[in-house]
Amino acid sequence: MSAVLLGSIGTLADTSELQRAAFNNAFAAHGLDWSWSRERYVAMLATSGGTDRVAQYAASRHQTVDAGAIHATKSELFQQGVVRSGLSPRPGVVDTVRDARAAGMKVALVTSTSPANVEAVLAALAPALGRTDFDLVVDLDDVDAPKPDRAAYDVAVAALGESAAQCVAVEDNVDGVVAAIAAGIRCFAFPNQNTKDHDFALAQARVDSLDLARLTSTAR
Image (cartoon, rainbow, N blue to C red; front, side, top):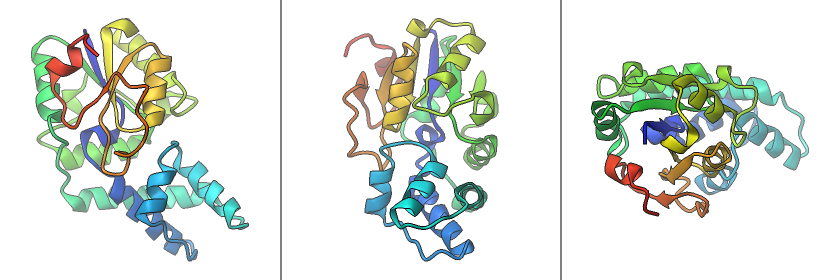
């Protein structure tokens, strides 16, 4: 293995409940009486795309809303929440990044979220983890289609100058796993608190903590 590809901000820190709170606060800011319970939100996380979730939920209630504007507000509120929250890295993440770099491997963050979300999370995780710990950061501005489309991984592999077969990915959601596998990359599932009950059967394995030796092992 020559590169470790961390597939979302959720593989760095568990931000899922901050995301849900930001959605609910955005709904209130737009005058909507919506409130997504944790149970509802967990079910929605089976697929990616916050704007699409808002649009689909509005349609289910026979309401017309500006899903893009609501999601933009949600993103701003999420970034503010991240700054206030004092995020902690997920188990094993910092050691895995440092061990990989010490071993001469490349490390990339390969997400299809916005650059602003990436910067907010990395700023909140500093000094434990920051942009300089990554050889490459791919975000929504770098691709035409978000995951489960494979585009983000194709961009990363090309930019790193590596072959997909020599990379290993880590994802906290099913769409991310699908994207990595479509790009020919071995992928480990590292679920967060709100995706832990999702079906990660396509993944190489499911882990609760990151460890470089496990990620680079060829054993299933």
